[in-house]
Length: 320
Image 1 (cartoon, rainbow, N blue to C red):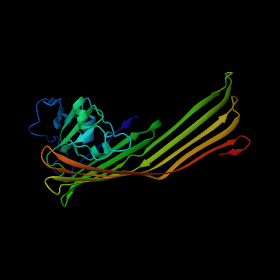
Image 2 (spheres, rainbow, N blue to C red; image 1 turned 90 degrees about the vertical axis):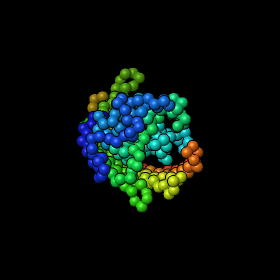
Image 3 (spheres, one colour; image 1 turned 180 degrees about the vertical axis):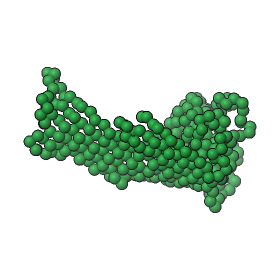
Image 4 (tube, rainbow, N blue to C red; image 1 turned 30 degrees about the vertical axis):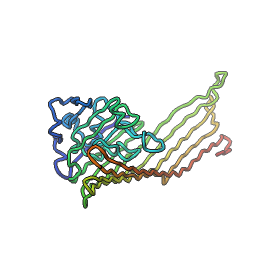
């Protein structure tokens, strides 16, 4: 799918639009292509990604050498179905929307990305052979930041479209809050010709078909982090995804001589459909090497679909 992209990003505070990105003093090094640590992790400092002008952590993860982002699997339960990205060494408390989580992290707040392979990766996230750990700048999220992105796109057969998303993070009464909104509509138009040929190689039908699809959705989420004590951390996430979907197909069916046999029409409409996810976790550290984490996650979805299929013969007989 061809894209014509027009991207803009800005920061409300603390130099998000600056060309240089922050990095840990003890990890930055002259090797911009990545350095291998003693534990076998490949480390890519923020300076490596500066050449790509990233806006969010997702832009950086997608540019990490030898790594492909994989979302969580759609299965019951939470253990063993996570995606292959950690944030500060922790699994996000969500079964989907991992790319959305990364989009809400400004690139200026990423110190480095570590890539773990083989046994080390499987120890961190069950079932994954390659894992990326996004390490944030110490204290990231304490200052208000805003990012936004706008893209112009060409959909199927040159249908124009757009993509918008934005984030805003801030601190309020001891809570770190992140807001996210995404509007990615999608459209397609198409046409095709079909021949129905019998076993005797004689053309039975000629079908002139056209179809169009229109998908509209809004994705929004709220993430809240709270550390009431030095040993306790609580995270809460609310993720919503309402959408509308329309599909129509028309077909004019003739015989080999062009005589009309029938006209077919199909339509699918989905209204008031949505997906909702509420999740959270509480972690208590007993010591530097021992901690306890409790995770809760609830997902809900609803879909109201109307379908119509109708066929009208040349004589006017109607069936549906």
